[in-house]
Image 1 (spheres, rainbow, N blue to C red):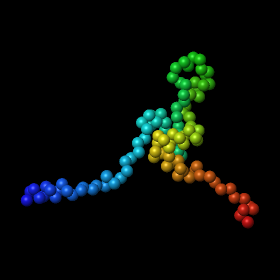
Image 2 (image 1 turned 90 degrees about the vertical axis):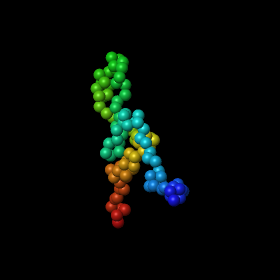
Image 3 (image 1 turned 135 degrees about the vertical axis):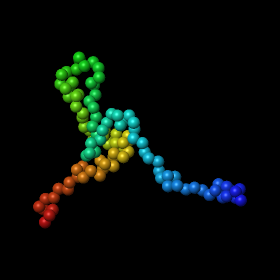
Amino acid sequence: MIWLELAASITKPKISNKENKMPKMKTHSGAKKRFSVTRTGKVQSRAAAKRHRLTSKSKRMKMEGRSTHIMKDMNAKTLLDNFFPYQSRKRRNNPKRQRKVATTKKEAA
């Protein structure tokens, strides 16, 4: 009897919900440390050229390097698509980023 129960339990395939789901995409760990994404979907980064050889750099360059910078759109898009898989959705669905359709009096008539 015990042998039949063991044989029945071995032949039954166990299907769980975890097997049917796709694996989660991972955020690039180096990008997590260097960039942050704002609520509107823009990418912030720290300024470059602030680590060494500061004596040869101008005062203005050192002052501007204190704050974070917003990345250009094409660089940010590349970064979001490749390294932040779940943040790029936020940028696409943002209502502030959608184009507004201009309406004039001639079009309304």
